[in-house]
Amino acid sequence: MGYKVAVVGATGLVGREMLRVLEQRDFPVEELRPLASSRSKGKKVPFRGAMLEVEELSEEKFEGLDFALFSAGASISREFAPKAARRGVVVIDNSSAFRMDPEVPLVVPEVNPEDAKAHKGIIANPNCSTIQMVVVLKPLMDAYGLKRVVVATYQSVSGWGKEAVDQLWEELELVMKECPRCSAEEIKALLRNKEGLKRVLAHPIAFNALPHIDVFGDEAYTKEEWKMINETRKILHSPNVKVSPTCVRVPSLRAHSEAVNVELERSFPSLDEVKELLSKAPGIRVLDDPASSVYPLALDVAGEDDVFVGRLRRDLSVEAGLNMWIVADNLRKGAALNAVQIAELLVG
Ligand code: L14
Image 1: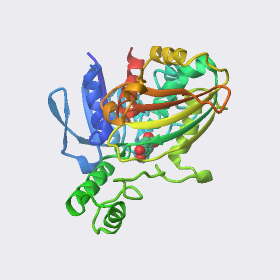
Image 2 (image 1 turned 180 degrees about the horizontal axis):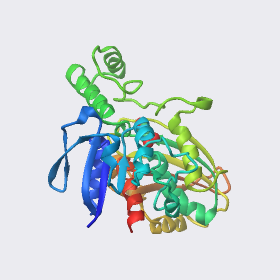
Image 3 (image 1 turned 90 degrees about the vertical axis):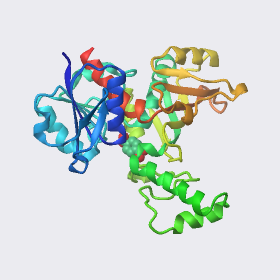
Image 4 (image 1 turned 180 degrees about the vertical axis):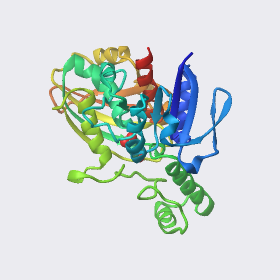
């Protein structure tokens, strides 16, 4: 016996990772139903040694299911999540559609697991950059109080999806083919002027860093930056905590990195105490040995489940401040793993 589970957006990067996480964690799945748009009809996705045929998403496909994990974009969620919920399915939604809805819990299991219980059919999975940050902020907040967070993200192309990963590869291949070991100016000319080069991000991403994730919104902040402000407050139940983000896309494939500066209410006695506190907190691994060049790196954290933190040091410019470097796999803890962990809260 087990649960009947749909994955909506099963052919996407996050959808495929959801299947992998369900399998790896031995989630009690009795039946798995991969759903996607008509474009993916007939495709197959691997689950527990079998290849499952992807079915076209429609309202009727939710009949008789227990869980539906959505990762097919906000408009699909807006249309189908309420319909699934009305049929008694518990929806765990990875899109931004319902995250700030006061009726919808926004859950990171290490931080606010109790919120999940109050759901009315839909639970939202937070934004990837927010998840990895709040996992670390929570124990700091509980111990020392939280005043203000200043964060700059270094986000991988996989956060956008397959096409952005393809864009990075195509740009790198083009450079290697037509202009290997070129100067920055020559690469600029090549990547800016080449016709037929597919581009889903606003600019070339190879050899670059783009301060632009999601679309621009109020006050000249991007929506990704607004998500970090609003979702952090909601998850931590701290409507007054100040969050000042800058979100940047970098040419890493997988795992987001973040430079995080925290101003606390009360000072911490020593860095050792902070390291001890974070090492004991759920879902966190401290990796911090600067003398040996040891700190978390996107390349190493890709494929891992934990949130990694290093470069811990006092902010010498304020009374009670801490600087750190936080890295997590955006497709796992930032998306698929967190979603499955939410489901585990409800079956446990
Ligand atoms: O979950 O990296 O709101 O482009 C939307 C876009 C997360 C990341 C979300 C990206 C995101 C993202």
